[in-house]
Image 1 (cartoon, rainbow, N blue to C red):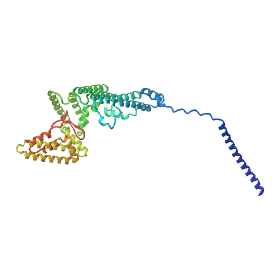
Image 2: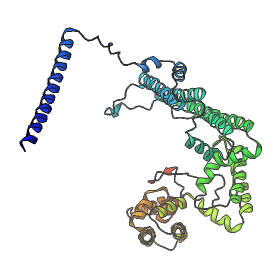
Image 3: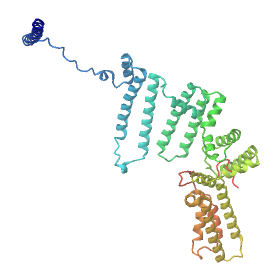
Length: 437
């Protein structure tokens, strides 16, 4: 046992001595490194370069130069377009501040709609258009503007993209010129201003016709002309077929072109000529639609009908309520004519009839449209007959010797172009193609 223990102790001492030697060697190496570090200075690191101000090198006042620098730096076209657009935006904002200031949102009393301010807005719109054209010149039509392409197709029809772009540019240019005329007029168009606008529209259509084929021009007119826009608004409840719409459009366009800019004004001879043309137009519309559809068309062209139809739609009521309200108005007017022509009734009896008729009419309107719908209808141009009836019935008994005649006259008078509470202007008289009676 002792013979085995002696060698083991010797091995242990050797191992410990090796461990100690290793630790000593490590300490010595560390001390050497420390000494070297203290006596031999390390080489100076290269000075840190300031971050490159790449944007300062690329930007500038000239958008074309900025685009060239961005391309030279390898910027993707999409990124370059956005950066150049930002440069143009800053230029636009600077011009806007120069023209109209920063605009204090709290100073509402300083808001102005003078002709000078409208002219400034025209200048800004023109500048925005120039910037848009410059972006197109530098980068072409933005491939990401599919929304704009779809907008043009909705506006002008399924035309080739190249034609859509030309038409869109042309429409914007003529729109800018028309805005300039209106801005210069200061909100009050004279006869010469209207003549200029009519001439501008005629020139615009000539330029459009030079771009499109006859078939394409037909589609364009059906979508964008003033006649088409007016017709679509007036036929909302009529639900025409394509054939009916095209037939009505052709008839009304001829009429509008014949009397462009007159707006029913003129001397007595001109008014007689227009009235005769309207009667002829109504006859042609009846021939194109047939008797049944013409009666529907005639009824739905009445401004009062369109007002009550919108009210019925707003409150989720059946569409036939519009017919019933219009029928009620007609029956009331018929009863007023009977009262007016009945010489056997005393003024007191007529007064009693008027009060009863007013009460019955109000109750019937509430039954048809509901309380909210009835109140809305009463405030619109369509409800003018009801307000007139209520006003006459509320007068003192001896104030008007012929209350029935007064009520009939005021209830049947066409209201002057009134904007109803729904925000829709109702025309005062028959528009071309709007039969009376």
